[in-house]
Amino acid sequence: MKYDFDTPVDRRGTFSYKWDAEADYFGREDVIPMWVADMDFPCAPCVVEAVQQRAAHPVYGYTIRQKPYYDAVLGWLKKRHGFTVSQEYLAFAPPGVIYAMNVMLRILTQPGDRVLVPMPNYDPLFDMVTRGGRQLVETPLVWQDGRYTFNYEDLEAKAASGVKVLIFSSPHNPTGRVWTREELDRLAQICLKHGVFMLVDEIHCDFVPRSHPHTTFGLLGEKVLQHSMICYSANKGFNLGGLGMATVVLADDDLRFRFNEEMSIAQTRLDNIFGAAALMAAYTQGEEWLDQAIEYVEKNKEYLAQFLQTRIPRIKMIPSEGTYLVWLDCSLLPFRGLALEHFMLNESRVAFCAGYEFGEQGEAFLRMNVACPRSILKQALEQMETAVNKL
Image (cartoon, rainbow, N blue to C red; front, top):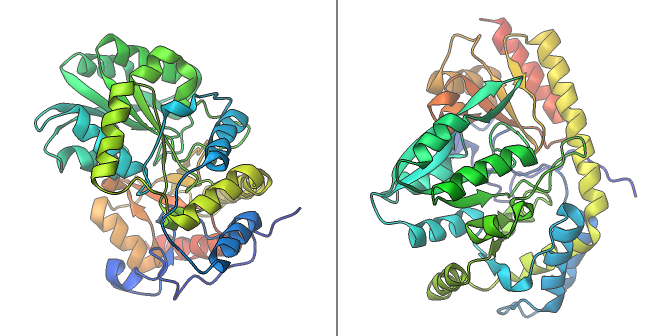
């Protein structure tokens, strides 16, 4: 079946965080939102049908996970990522990945403990450190051979300095790097050597092209599994962000018990009833849709790269190996930080995630979401071109 990603879907008036909060967030309603990490594509038809079918039953009471749910999760991890995992290692966090990681961070650390985060990075991954009273230890990603990678010397020196936990995203948000197995293995060995527990956000792992295959942390061996928590979700790959789900792989029995206790105390152990239906449909019937969505977004990235190179050469696109996010280098423009964000908002009328949100290294950058019909991407780029040409 050929799916339609070209036809725009009007999301205004649906309480969309991306499309209906413009006045509140940006002070104007005439901007094209290219910021929030959800897609402007209709969900896979199998997902829509599953949710509609469940909605047709008039009782929306509490739900539980049963064998079809577990089979869907375990089957997807094995089929899509080659990861065969024991069901007993699974835990769940219906509020989502960030909630799960924050809960585990509080289990593993006390206020004042040191937590290592590669930077730039998705801001909630380090906000949970500082806002939770922990000490943020930054290790900078380095630009090497045309892509970002870890600074292993800096990373090891800081891992040896009393750090308790490493937090990072794989694939990487905001740069779109898909880490190789060699990179991840070297990272994991450093953490094992220095007793650093690893919190791994793999929420974008499903949305990668075959040219840059994702290596899930679960494939790095049992010892790594025992010293890490890996977070998965159907929310990014299948555009289910409003349904708030996360699957957690926690091999350590004691930590998994403590994690589940926290879920129970907070009464967050049960899934969203529609989220459960959506997840099972996505994981068992949605792979063809996902592959076509990835292919479409890859074409959007190609279009973006060509447009910038030929018509806005002062903005450089960092090669995005995975996710539907693109990291734009605007260092040739005369703006940084908030001024860069305001220029794009007020002159081009395009809303991005400002690079400074991801750390000091992002002052001259913008994060762009290109999971949209190409006509919307084209309009946004033409408005950017007009604004930059006026400088």
